[in-house]
Each structure stands twice: as structure tokens, then as C-alpha cells.
Length: 198
Image (tube, rainbow, N blue to C red; front, top):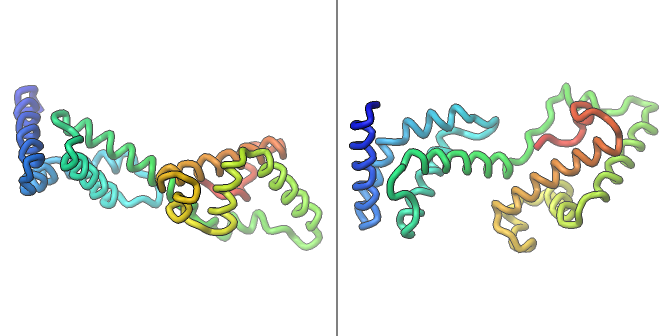
């Protein structure tokens, strides 16, 4: 795209954003048609496992619509704003997504054979030691999500956080538990796969 064409497009975007701020909902449809293919390509280039790209595109444009309607959001440089929104949505959703179950092959690696009860007991003790090393806030969110099975959004209010902040806290806590476990067991990070992947 030439610089003059880019300037025209940027000018057109500014006009559409101004119309949208003035309550013209058809302007949103035009913005969507103009930028959705590019946003989708960008989201695909940053693909995260288990996250649907079309859902990301829809969420990005929904956030733009909410921002503009509340008097915030982009006034120009729409493309930069949209790319930033894609990155943010992917990061939030990756942190909030529950871990995928292990495959049967992975599970088989961690099922103790008959007579390996001492090994299993030692693993449990290592995990308990690692858990107790964590900050109280991390222990609380891990217990609520991993043991009791609550989703971050359902315990956010009790923790005094937003659902997104709770999901990020749970993600950090899981990562911290893995690191503490590796330190306690002196295993390379790739070996202790019995802990769920974040």
C-alpha cells in the first residue's frame, strides 16, 4: 500500500470512528468489513492452541465497539489499536484457558507400576513441599481452581479481583508451583510433566 493510499485509509477510519462515536452503528459494520480480514490474519500468525481465531476477531471488535461507545478507543491508527487488542485478548485467554487433559501416553508415563508406591509417595511429598513454598495468595487460588474445580470467574469476587485478574493469578500460581516443584526435585523442567501445563 502506498503512503497516499495509507493516508486516505487512515482518514476514512477517522471519519468512521467519528460517525460511530456519534451513534451511527453502520460505521461499525464498515470498520469491521475493512479491517476484519487483516485482524484475522494477524491473529492466525499468533495462534494459540485451543483458541479459535474467529472468536478472537469477534472479541477484538466487540472491545473496540465498547471502547468507542464509552468515549475511549482509537481516534486514528486503527490498525495499531486492533493489533494491540489481538495481543491482549490472546494473552488473557491463554492465561484463563483451563489446561488440556493429558493424553493417554502422557498419563501412562506417570501412573506408578505395582510396587512403586514409595515413588508415588515421594512425588506427593515433593508436590506438597512445593505447594507450601508458594505465597498464600497463590496457594488459595490453586486450591480453589485445581482442587475444588472452580473457574476463575466464579471465585473472582471472593478474591477481590476481576475475572481476568483471577485467571492471570491462577496462571502465575500454576507456573510458580511447577518451578517450585522442579527446584524441590532437582529435575529438569521437561521431566516433571505430572504437573498440568499452563
